[in-house]
Length: 438
Image (tube, rainbow, N blue to C red; front, side, top):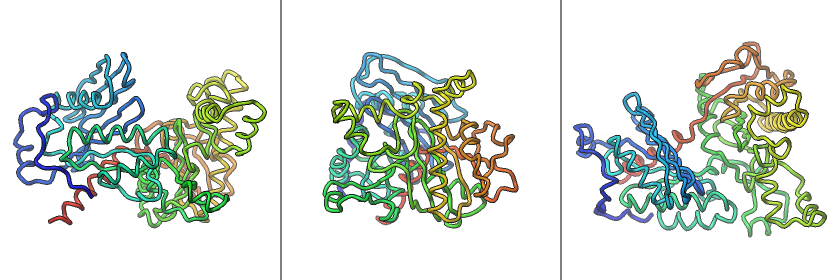
């Protein structure tokens, strides 16, 4: 790997932290740094969290939205020591470099500047790592080049991830930058699950196979589910249902993913907020021939104008449920299609695993929409699955079991924490590299 340049370049004034406390001085004097800044860079946004890995605590978090527009918005929330008031600023932020400098300024105001000796690494969410990246990876020129080579199979995500990485590397070229890949957790899938049944030479030449996404969430939630059951990940088989605006399912056997619903891209699988999920591939040919739609128009249709939005005009499950309560037939149809697809994947992954210890719901819809959980499990009693109505109705930020005591298979709600997972993986890698260099 490419070595980080030394000595550390001087940081701009706006990136410097407040004067060292005795704690930070001790960190600089030899104590291993424990903080990780996690960046999730989108095409026009930058989400971030600063965590202390001594106790997995959050020191600050926030988001920069509408980067490149006159109406850019930064929302920053300090969390250390009980937290402070949320700060919001609006105004033009030209690009991701300017966004990260603005974030650094907010952190500096909290005494958490990017030049702190307690900062161990910057962890980056990268959506697509192909088959090469199966673990968190320290980023060098070769890694950057490979992420760029994967842009054709992740055109909406990898370019934005690269922008965030290069911006952070320019600000802290001395600091380990770690890529944590959405696809990595799914690289344990057997070929029978990962292969599409198309010509092998064509598939290999163009990297066409099932990669899966949301891997950091599936990894985190499957491990936390094992903990909830009082077992190790190696002892349990879990079906994880990550249900947000994007949605995916995974079958996890003994801590290893053996199947997942998303494929070459995040379009395959479950019905999502704006994505169709599974669809006959011939639909694309039909739309081109009969409707005269271009490839780009079909792409937009399936990714941005389908799913719940395409079925009823809304992708907010709360609004859909409100409309159903008022007798809206299109909303009811959208909900039924959503649940039907979800139930099919639960059954399919039950068959893949053979034995299931838990079905777990996570992410925005999975954690908060009790009617979705109830409907998805209804009718699966012969598989040992059931939901207790009272337990299911409880709103909580804690991991919890919502199935009755008599159920053979646990049904659980486990809040996901992708930022914590990225921070943990990044910090563990940096510590391991430090130990190997001693």
